[in-house]
Image 1 (spheres, rainbow, N blue to C red):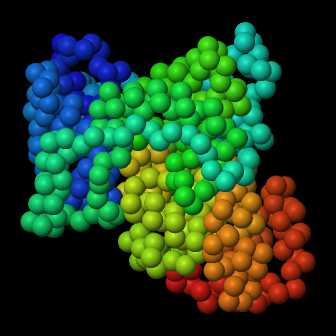
Image 2 (cartoon, rainbow, N blue to C red; image 1 turned 180 degrees about the horizontal axis):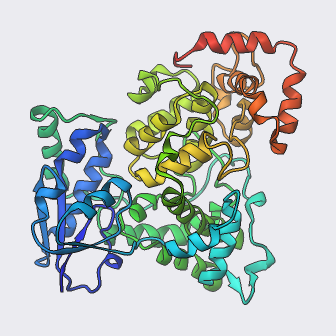
Length: 483
């Protein structure tokens, strides 16, 4: 049996043909030399590689500057998750590339579904995937008679969520070795990182990932649905699974994750509202984003339909949360700095919303998310940021810009109560940067958004603002300063 080369996001047993298959792992220092990654992301990846290699005679771990110099024998490899990696695989001699694994819907099935559609929408793909893979289906009908409980999953946060914390990660000597190596790389090799160091917060082994999966399904999944869009300053986890890093490392097969969730509904009576919402994220959104990365043209990541040309400010790139007075943005940026992770609504409606309002370059923002998050990869962030978060593709995969003012954040979080800004104020010293930024964004892009029926009501509100000119002037003067 030929040796299987596993990239660092292909570390689970579903990437092998048998448990006895010999494995090649490559630890490439050059990857970290080319880009400034979050320190905890680098730690997690290296720890996962080294944990898989330890005590396994079938695994050969090669530490090299580049992948090319490490692959010196005939190997097979599952289709990589980036165009650059696929190009490398195709250039290397004696490397056979297999079909992709680690996703639920096959590429040919996605292409067949997408062919001839003017707009690609998650809901349409998600229903097709549910039928195709018989997930949460009662015969030909969706379980419970509904495809989507999204409208029910928008509850504002309670004072607190009484759910136990996920199992703690216990670092070992491999983690200590990784930390020493990263320190040496920074000191001697000029390799730079961003963000604060550990302790490691995310699984680096399949056993750790399975423990997190079981705990989530047992304790947190029942509350996930109604509060999946809620935010609490004192609870960065809420009822979220924190499984994205494990799935994207390949430690968990997304299909097994979905099956665990469905079993909780079928066998334990967990509310369908929560189970469906979670399944939609994995079977629906995650696969959808993966396939869009390959289905859209390579130049998609340069899309800029709204003409957003501002560079990311230095305080944002450095994760300098202490420079920010707006409580929501400061707290979320601190979460990225300290954990390399915040949950999805914080990414979309605090980080992405602010960036879109300010007209930051979508491609640069996608790269920032890729480098700064432990679950970030090029395929993850391209359509997520370019299309969903920044609406830079003009609506090819989403129906409206996800722009909102301070009223949304006030309704869905507890941030505004302790903030120096007031969410209902758009002009003056107390003006919420999200509220003022929202109206300034609409004013700049009224022409581009005029034909979008979902934006008709906000644009009508825009035209009624007597102080709009002053608001726009105020936000232009704010520029790239931290709010």
